[in-house]
Image 1 (cartoon, helix red, strand yellow):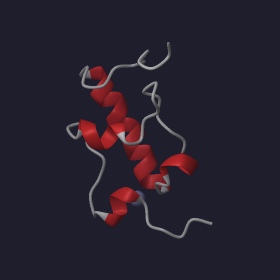
Image 2 (cartoon, protein in one colour):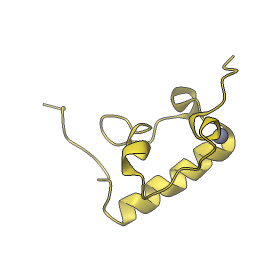
Image 3 (cartoon, helix red, strand yellow):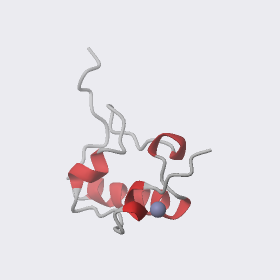
Length: 71
Ligand SMILES: [Zn+2]
């Protein structure tokens, strides 16, 4: 069991599409959103994160797929 508070609750903040660097911490190498088991976020923040990442993608702040490191 992971009793630690999630990253965003700990910092008393919420995921924001403007904080690309923060969002990228929760993305895989291929820019896929990591599952809750890997991110360690609470249900609320994970859902918010997904929303914000999608919005950041829509604004082209984060690429949909990254081919970096696949070669
Ligand atoms: Zn949380």
